[in-house]
Length: 407
Image (cartoon, rainbow, N blue to C red):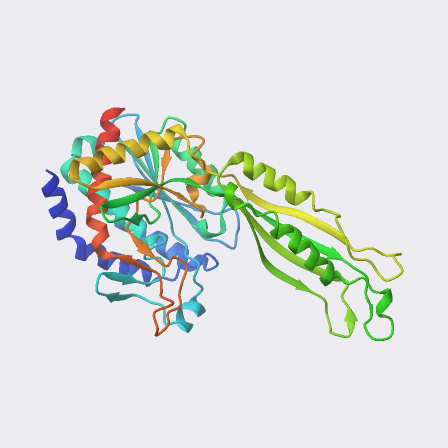
C-alpha cells in the first residue's frame, strides 16, 4: 500500500504543480482582497470533487478578503482540521518590479506563495486525495474542516476565533500546512512558535529655532535615541527574548529642534512567562526620559503603547502527542521526523491551547517573503522544492491514518 500511495502522488505530481502555478499566478497580497477572493474561489472549486462545501466569510477588517471554510461531513463525530492561508506578502507592483512570477528551475518552483502558503494548500489536496483513494473508510468517517485565512500575514484575530468555532473542542487535531524544513534523513515539524507583541513609541519634545533659540528646545529625536538603546538592551538571547526597533521617524525640517518622534517595536519570545515579563519591562520604559531643554524647565515625555500581541505557542502535551504520531509514521517509511521551534507565527498560535495542533506539514522550500534575486546568488526568491511534495504527502497520509486509528 505504501508504494501505491507514493506512486499515486508521484504520477499526479505534474497536475499538482500545474495547480500550484494557477494559484501563484493570482496575486493574493493581503491588501488585494479581489485577488484573495479569486484564489478562494479557485480553491473551493479544486476541493469540490472531494465532496467539500464552501463558505466564504468576510474578514473583520473590510480591507481584507474572505476567509474560506471547506467542510465535508463524515459518518462519525470525529473531526480533523487542516489550516492554510490565501494571502501573501507581495503587492502586485513588487512582483512586477522584481520580475517575481512563476518560474521552474530544476527542482525549484519559484513564485509568490509557492512556499508560504499556496504550496501548503496543494499539500492538503494531495493528502486528502490519497486518503480518499487508499483509505476510503477512514476518509469518509472523518468530518474534515479546511480553514484558509484571508489575512494570515496580518495576523487576523478573527480567524483564530473562527477556527475554534468550526472545529470545536473535541477535534482530533488541527494540522497546519505551513512549509516544513527538510533534513538529510527526513523533515522537521513545527512544535512551538514564538509569540509577538508590537508597540508604538512616541516622544514629545519642545520645538525651537535651531539657530537662534536652540537652548530652549528639547530634542525629541535625541530622546528617542536614548529610548531605542533602552529597548535594545531588553533583548536576552539566553531567554530567546528579542526586541526589534523596526521603524523610526521624527522632526519636520532641519532648522527646527524636533518636537516629536515615533518608533515601532516588535518583541518575540517562546516562553509565556518570558513573554509576559518582556511586555512588563517594555511598558516600564514609559515616561523614562533623559532629555530636557538647557535650563531644565521642559523635559521630553515618552509614551509606549502596546499595539497588539499574539501569545506564544510553547511546548505542550497536545502537540507532543501529534509529533509522536508523525514520528511513528516516519519510522514506517524510513523518514526521520524531528521537531522545530520556529520564531515566526502562524495560525497555530491562536488555537494550540484549545486543541492538539502541529505545524510545518507543507512542502519544503526557502526564502519565504523574499521577491528579490541577484546575479551573484546572494539573494534569491521564494521557492518550493518539487521533490518534497510526494514524500511529505505520503508521511502525512500515514500519520493521519495512525491518528484516526488511535482515537
